[in-house]
Image 1 (cartoon, rainbow, N blue to C red):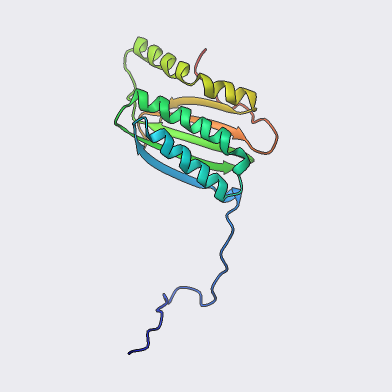
Image 2: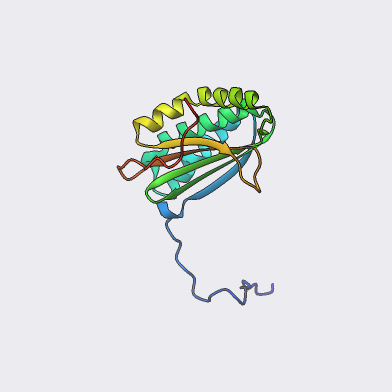
Amino acid sequence: MPLIRPIRCPAAPLAARPPQVPRPAGLACSITVPGEPHSAAIVRNTVRSALHAHGLAPHADLAQLAVTELVATAAKLTPGEDLYASVRYRAGALRIVLWDQHPRHRDPDAVSVCEERRRRSLWLLDAMAEEHGGDWGTEEAQPPHRGTKSWALLPCEGFAVRRTRSRLSR
């Protein structure tokens, strides 16, 4: 029987690097799911796993609530269309972003009705962000994305985030 030797990439370092423990600063998790009700559970479980792996487990409940609300609302407003969710940890806060494919309305009345519908659907996210010193909002997605960008900013270091963007009008 011939001797089998592992083949290494010539560009790879010869010394094996010990495995690195994920740190909060390295958290960058994204997922694309269909705009269906069951997608909220998929994204919620993905976020929980990512936070646990990066030492942010104490913040998993709030992050799961935020992402569930964002996905559920987007799935109602753009059923069947892809949703893209992202969670990152930067500057002591979790940044959760969801892009949906909801088209921008041309009629100003339709814009107002649609924004109001989205705002009412996100009442629980609004209350949670207010209670825990976070922030949230929605805006038209910028290219290369299309549709609507919804986001939540949740502090992790015991301080409230500075509200930098306005929420939908109340």
